[in-house]
Length: 296
Image (cartoon, rainbow, N blue to C red; front, side):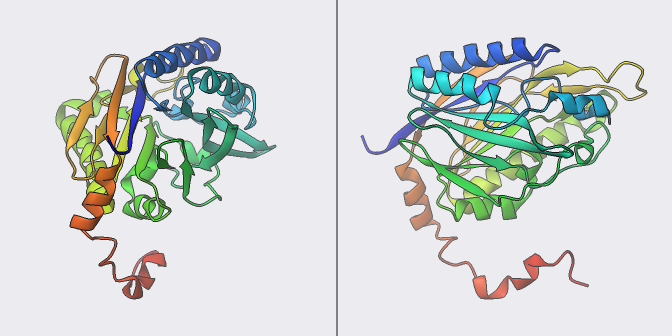
């Protein structure tokens, strides 16, 4: 049959109680494993509502160490179900130093490593620069039993450089745990264009790098904090898997919790990289200016 792996996407709502959110994520991860998923990805910062809708010092109390209590929960699940789980967490590294971090939990080894989000947004209702220090571990790839995969997070998904550098580490699958949605006042006029752009950029990463891309979003409306003049966010779900030829292989709904399990033919990665040899034809001698902010 060749090399295959099945990825599990957990698209979930995130309520006010972190323990309930973890329990929901555990239940859904187990269900994905029971449907033969081997690599399971949870959405970005799933333990809580998306707290970056405001700048609030009290929200730093939500952070935890990595490894820590939540990774230990998923280490047990990974061992029980013989899977690898990607766990997105608010990491407390030290007093005053916090990251948006993805922990990799392996079936055999437990916690094996982390990726810290490199690109940090600062937009209305997405005030992440208040909370997160940009990642300092570079772009990462990890080995599971069947596949080598890369870990990126949400805002990273708009940057072709991030996808390329992760693919150059041998990643056959790029995972993007995500928290993205509409501002209600913009949805009618701009909503469909925004969502199409989000999907299109990740499909382009798959084609340009000859790999699979897996985007895992949360779903549901989350109001702005009490007393805020801001509107809330309607997270648009739509978690999806795209193949190395850019074809959409599966997509979740825009308004419901859902588990997707998708079988991936890993030999397709090499076939596409041979047939569309973008990595071969890169002019690495001509790209020095990519390290500049702008070419004036």
